[in-house]
Length: 483
Picture 1 (cartoon, rainbow, N blue to C red):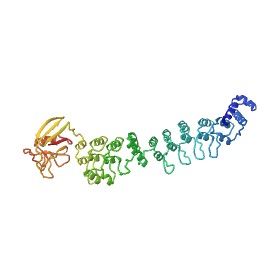
Picture 2: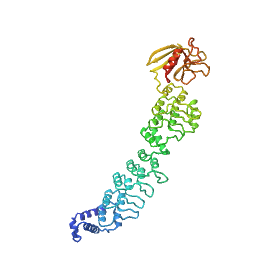
Picture 3: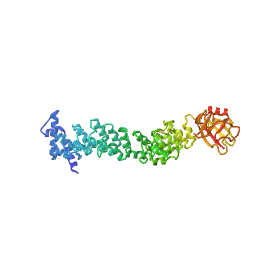
Picture 4: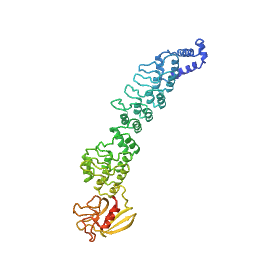
């Protein structure tokens, strides 16, 4: 049997004697109140002496934390003192906590030990409870007035130890009660730095939830966002975006991640960012680097991005012909009619015209009728135009399209301009009731239709038909021109 076990047996034998008998053995003491406390002290001292112990603070400190709780109780009753300290400044209650003997801690506190006592390194009961993951004791100590602001000699608070230990529940317990928790501690790092360095998503999220929204993205926070995006963790992406005021910028291209997704033609990433709260009106950051520009479509889109300010997401999406993404952006509040700034002032429609995608142009016109609701079909071979409503042909007319050498373009278009009185900038000829298609230099207008294939590329309509089309076809109306 161990020494402690042997002593316990003797203590139980002695303590098992009725108090009255012990009192008689000690000299016939019978008392009440303060006298009873003194009597119990004498009884405890008598038992300890019979066991061969000296009743000293040093002996009490030596025994505390060894598991000999009964002995410690006897020493305290014998008057050894709750405030005794060892060479490291630890009191009995601190030693008990360090040993994980929380029942003894409980008894010591009930006897009058202080909850805010600290050792020579500034470590107290709260820190011990945090390190040992004793959430019940953390709650109890905080409710009893333990100060979560206290830092040890390494400038770490209990909250920092919870972060270092990746204890999410403990972080959540402490962060709401810790003021100025973002003050730097060691090596210039603060709480968020430690959470980012450890890389545990639950603890990092708990810290971000409990501290003010961050103005800027720290490198490790950006890495966490990129990992969440790569893994498709929509809830984490949304959370990280929501806890930062600044736009997340690619460390490679120096542009917002949304714009980089467009430049890389990565539709899933763009949609992920937008659905998680990215700003639908975010603009390109200036200056725009050559590497980023090289990834944009050559021609008008790249020139606009290089020479104009205020190029935003919907403009670039329109310039790629991404009609579904343009529709998504509009639904999220993107500006349909926003203009670039500087010498070049264009809107998303002009970006869409660079790729001649009718669907994108159609989406950008508010209230444009869907093709199945209203459209115009033009047959070059038949020299005929036909108006459809709700899928049914409601009107036909003869037309005159381009002469040899000036063919009328074939394809799918939308009406982008309407001018009652228009003068051709090329041929200086009047074109009444002009309906331009896809912002190009041709369209439908009133003209002579007696001879077929007689125009310079436009679609000539009889005067009354041109007037009717001008009145009935809103901007964005679909027009198909085929052989």
